[in-house]
Length: 354
Image 1: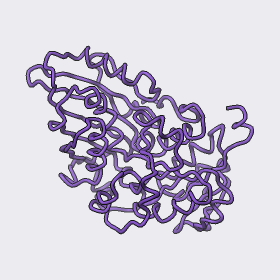
Image 2: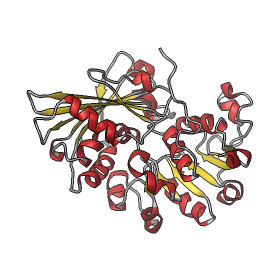
Image 3: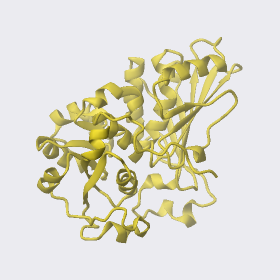
């Protein structure tokens, strides 16, 4: 750690002006082992970062540059790609070939089967060999693989919240996989910084609505990891909702128990054991259910558990900040593991409250 702090790792952020990019800039600018040496973008190229986000002042004294992979590779050891889906797959192979490590925050490298990606996201892919090398960037499940990876496909925000709540159920065989139902709610920042009518204040405020019912793109990502955990094909019923707040996701998971004799205390004990080596997961005590505000601005996931003995179901509630544990902070957590650092380095531990 000392050597890395005195010889910082040079990092670049492509897509620096979006919500994911600005979280990365904030975290990496204060990271004791990292130095931001490149900020890239297209529409914002030529602008100083502090002109786009004036509150940064001199914290990040760089300008956004046009994307030049040769230049990026010459200046960066690690590159974060915070881009719309379908762009990272055009850049990552070149960056990897030039010796960079890459963390992709889009969906491009989350799938082991590219045909699934193409079915849900469209586009043609010619990078099958590179995609086969990618590691799914959920440290609580794939920590060992992340440590030796060159390419990380960082999870989506809904999958992060949902999978952390589901993982012990499927890994330990506690729930029937075919009964999984996920009801999730997200703040409007999940839609990104590009203007979209449903995300306007006049549209979203004082309202609550489901969207992409039975067809949200995060569904196959959740099913892929659930299948790996359960060692069988898993289909989930996933319904997302838009909540009139800026940040946060609350994912509520329902499943039928295999053993109806298990009670809440049993599951809390099992969850605590499952996440005993996961510093960013907090399993809450009896009768305490998570709130998104607790996770605001942190890389933490709060999990609450309840058992309904009347219906034989377990209810797991998982809360994260969608821009942090659901996006940029989790990418930095993966960066820490890739570079041999403690996975808590440079990441906020607790939110400001209220």
